[in-house]
Image (cartoon, rainbow, N blue to C red):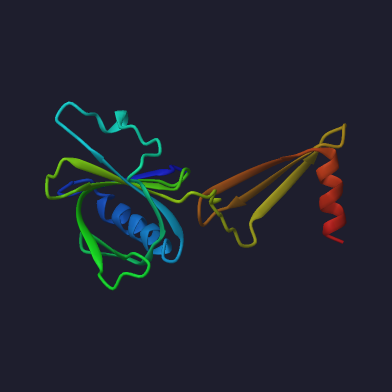
Length: 172
């Protein structure tokens, strides 16, 4: 599963709309959560990958409210602020593994934003009634294999003998 999703304004990538939808879902899911909001200047010699994202004095941490994406514009409220904020975007890169969104404004301004969830978020995969099999090793370790044909997903779980016993106990 690819954990990085990108979208660029004007892109002819056939996945562009789906990518923007996935990014919008992540953005909306931030509502009520604490985030780190960072902004860094760019010049023509600065590579996006060379930006220093270490904590700086102007970085903000707050609980974002009513995060939505309408068209190509991100909207949100800061706590205790009646004013809705927004930024129209030209480029978005969502790193699901590290739970961070890089934003380049469409205005051509020379800065980049990074919005990060400061907590670990686990990706969830749900399969319903998958095909499955198992193999028990002579030492008691096991390999469980789950396959979901609809999602074309195969999950292999390697378990120590201790964890095999724990699962047996929990399934009783």
